[in-house]
Image 1 (cartoon, rainbow, N blue to C red):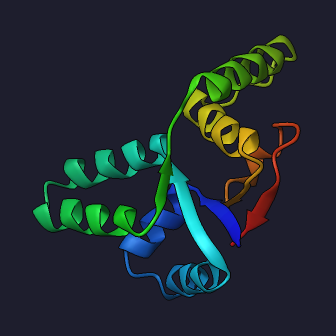
Image 2: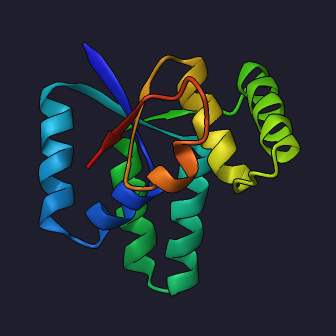
Image 3: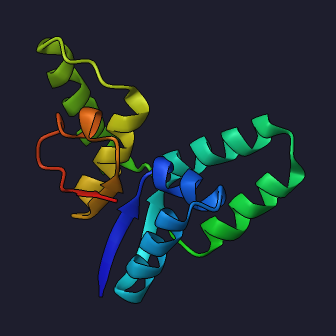
Length: 131
């Protein structure tokens, strides 16, 4: 069974009812289990609470219940620290949350499903899938 890690851009598009995103989610679920990271969960909940619509918070909860939410553990912490230090040394800054998300996916050998290639493509060893 194939597991893929969903980035926040896909999760938000699903919550907003974008048909292309919902189609991608159905495709992923038919091919195996879908996951996301605890960092993505934070980002989506943050947006839901900022919207001040209680239905957005409930929708976020329902969506995340369908996914495995992967933690930012010690292995991914070390990987993220090493990656961010390397990028900084080359003058290639990437948002620390993106580095954390990438580290969680990469340390578990999961492909990250995203449209944010600009940042994630700089992270070596991370497999990406465009949606």
